[in-house]
Length: 447
Image (cartoon, rainbow, N blue to C red; front, top):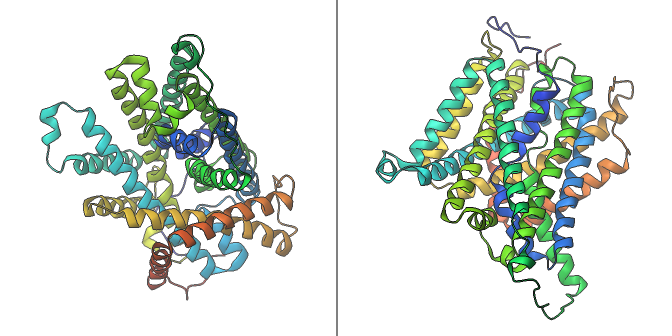
């Protein structure tokens, strides 16, 4: 291994951070908007709730699969670690480079959204500040970069605090919704039934697939704890608990939010609403309710920024330590933060923010995110065959059926994404190929 300056990753994280990372890396502003998209596809409350439950089960099965890999190979680098171990250095670099690119694109989009929400909450004179929402986005990236530069203790504490505030704010919204009269009571006792229409099974199947696409996207981020695998004090025990417990917590919260929205809004109104949570907020507090929901979305997104700013540098750190990118990326400060990797990540995201519109990059990033779980599932199956004696503190429940189900769903979504947007799919592949120009594929792996 190359000689690096003093400093190393710290082994101080526990279950509390793991759960906070899973919740913080998953829950963003999407849950405040996506219920309307799902209701627009499905004609009844039970079907809507079933879609959210189904998406949660998919994420849970994925967590159960990845938990075996994370506990067996607790090294920094995320999906790169598993692909490299199972398929070699080129495949490992491809997974790592793809993962880092997707994180940078996602970070830029989330920061831009934070800037837009933040600007909407500022008094009118402040809305004329230089760069507007872009300026606020840059401030958000810079703030969390400074927190991470202080070290792992500061970064983990901020993650736990933001995840706690996020969960409390969403639970407060749920509670407030249930304190309101139900939609039937608001209508004056009873609502005349609409003429029954039974959609064909073909229509219902297509609608269900579209609804699940939106739901599964909202569950993205459940694998966040794996990026910190090397920094857990007891990875074999706490990583599986963090992954599985995090998904269960998010699933419970998502179901509660949808139950609360269905309590306040008729299914037709929910389906027509662009931001259902804001519609519910106006029912709760009039015009002030919209601002309150914007504030909740802002808090949710800040926690997500913190997670990404923490996680993405660990990918570059792993690649640098193993000689797949220049080893300067593996430099760690005294607080346990990969400083160069952090600055490269924040700089790339800031550049995307300043570039302005990046909808096509976002579409490419979404495709890249779909590919990564497939790489993990393939690595799980390959390592079971190649290294049956590898210590496995946690073994995937229901193997081989569980990874097969996850792979089939992920593959279906990947095919659907390519068919529906082949231009951006080809562009995403070209973006990944660029990574080979910085690869040090001739280097020897560290012992």
